Length: 315
Ligand code: RIB
Ligand code: CA
Image (cartoon, rainbow, N blue to C red; front, side, top):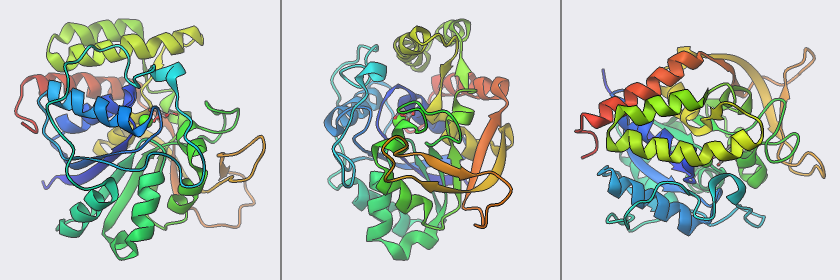
């Protein structure tokens, strides 16, 4: 069975890093490139975090830096969740790997243009790079198989009462992506808050006892502090849902809806307005994940770390 070529666009970010490891372990996926966008922290910090953990874990995947911030707005980072470095917790040696000598959009264009198969995009930060890529390369849209993104919510937000951070950060970019006509699979907060791990499971991850599991346990020890302080006993693995959907969509329950982006609301900016009521006159543009088999998802994470520990991937 041929592997699915994917590009991961991200803002590492604790959950971004875990998503990358889940993808790297999968024999169904071929990570052609990792592109970085400002979001959880500045572009420089997210890029440095990525190069440091890929170097530490000896994973060799092309990495390119993209947009420093949103298309039209200033960047708002999230130190409250990810710390001042954007990946507080793990103590890693300096990066030995360097980014490729092109920017994120150029790397995306190169990968898609050269690919014999259609490429899947897995964005898990603000959608700025994706929007620029689509606008700059309209001829390549037909070579994008689908977009499985972490972002949005049909109900409760996490950056505002109604909006999720990635979409809220760059709503104009999200609007471009949601209007692109590319098959869109939204892993929003509706499902990602169901895809969490508790303290016992984090201890089980650490007990796997290889450098990948130790890194993930260190990430989760820090990332969990923010969520425990909010009274959550499960630490949501937002971004790995975007990858897990590509690996095993049957793990998810979904509905097709028309989703549009609020770019003007004073109180509702960045809301993924989901027409999930009976009278919508628009055809659906998005498959929205609303549920997940959590046990299956957690097993995928554990198995991924075991597989990486046996080596050989992206060496
Ligand atoms: O709202 C969750 C999203 O915001 C995740 O992608 C997390 O990494 C942050 O970027
Ligand atoms: Ca992210």
